[in-house]
Every structure is written in structure tokens, then in C-alpha cells.
Length: 232
Image 1: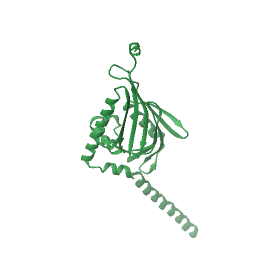
Image 2: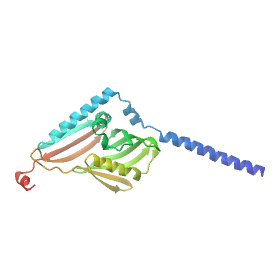
Image 3: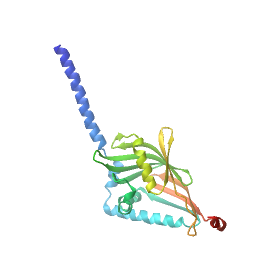
């Protein structure tokens, strides 16, 4: 009996040790900060402001170009996007994100984007990250194939985050629809239709490319004929 008792204690000790180790691992895993996110947060405030201003300038120029007939294109660097997220989004568009999602940042690789943000709630404080393949499904329809979601280093069920993503896309003016491709969620974001009024024409986004550290977008604008305008 004494030997069996010792064996049982040893087994329980191993189980307790593994459980404690697992708890420690889970704590540090949940509080893991992805390298790209830590690097983006470390940018000096002056550099963030300069990058944000450049992002706003390029976006304004793109918007003006898209008001006129013909082709247009623009590119935005990771630094410019992250600067805008850190400065202009926070100052002028803060309500587009749910309050528990804070300090969003991105990393851009060929064909793929990683988005991270601080998630703060009474039950959990961690860095959420989302990896998605990004491409143009058809003109004016942006497709995001969600590959994985993580809280720190811990994988999250994608169904738990998709509703928030859809809601955020709608807040930015997209028409959002959720589909499935193989085992992955597929989020389709459609630009709202333009009215082709006297100030401009119908805008068509023809190309969206994710290159290393850069987002490239191109398209064209067509002014409707006078006859078409009279029928609207």
C-alpha cells in the first residue's frame, strides 16, 4: 500500500507540475506581443505624425484623382498606414473601432496583411492579431481570406472575431458580406456605389496589390453620358 501510495503521489505531483507549467505558459502566451506590433508601437511620435500627414496627403490626392475621368493609382507604405492609425484615426475617426480595440497596427507582406491591436476588457488584456490574404475578388470588391487569429500566441476560434470585423468594415463605409472558402472565413468588402453626379463619374477599383511593406491600388473613373445622367 505504501509503495502504491507513493506512486499515486508521484503521478499527482507530475500532473500538478504540468498543470502549473501549462498555466504559466498560457499566461505568457496570452501576453505575448508580436514583433511587428511592438516595432510599430516603438515609432517616435514625430515620425508617426509625419507618416500620418503623408498618408492623409496621398489619400486626398487619390480622392481628387478619382473624381476625374481616366486612370489613377496610388501606393501607401506600412509606415504611412501605421502613422495614420496612430494619429489621424485616433483624433478624427475613433468611433469607427469598438472601444475595446485599441492602437491598431499592420504589417504588409506580398499578398498578405497582418493586423494587430490591443484588446482591453475586464476579463482579458492582450494583443489580438489577424492574418489575412488580401486580393480583389472583382472590381470594387475586396476579399479578405482570414487565415488565423491569435490572442498573444494563443490561436483563437475565428468565429469569435468575425462579427467584430464585419462591423468594423461597415463602419468604414464598406458593404460587408461573410462567406466561406474551404475552411477559412472569406470577408467581402464592397465599395458603396457612386452616384455619377456632375462632380465626378463612376469609380472602379481595378487592382489591389500587397507588396512587401506597401499597399498599391489602381483603378479608373468613367463619367456617365448625359443621357444616362438624365435617367437618374
